[in-house]
Amino acid sequence: MKIKTLVVNAILAALYIAVSGLIAPFGFTNVQFRVSEMFNHLVVFNKKYIFGIILGVFFSNLFFSPMVAYDLIFGVGQSVIALTITILSARYIKGIWKRMIVNTVVFTVTMFIIAFELNLAFELPFLFTWLTVAAGEFVVMAVGMPIIYFINKRVNFEKRV
Image 1 (cartoon, rainbow, N blue to C red):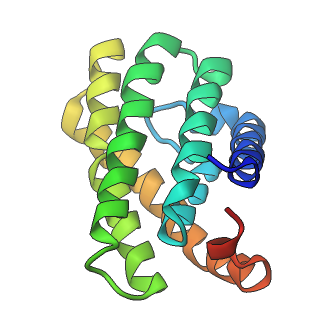
Image 2: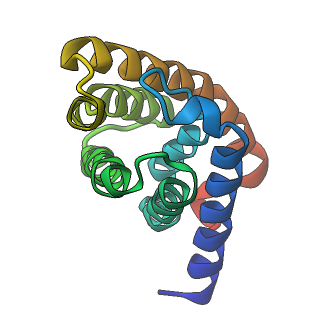
């Protein structure tokens, strides 16, 4: 891995952690609004961002989650699965907006993993919890699409790593 890619991913992980820390009370409940999840859209520009995102998720869960052991397995696992699906689907989907929409749908649907985690940890009802965490994820990812898109116009994420 190039030094530039390593540094950019370290900065991305740090940003993810910082944003997660700011909203920690709203990012680790059965209705999650983890604003840092909008960084997931970066993989539609370049798949190399997966490393920074996964590190950010890992350390955010390690530092801020009230259920560290569960979140390190289920939270990181859900991110790896969803990001991998998005990266693999990008081969067949042309256009940044279409890829971000697919990414949003993938992350929203795979929130069943987090609902299962919350069901195991707190015995919350699975379907209702899936609905609430998926709704929070959808809102954050949908709001994040234009934000990340317009930041890309200035920064050009494709060529940063």
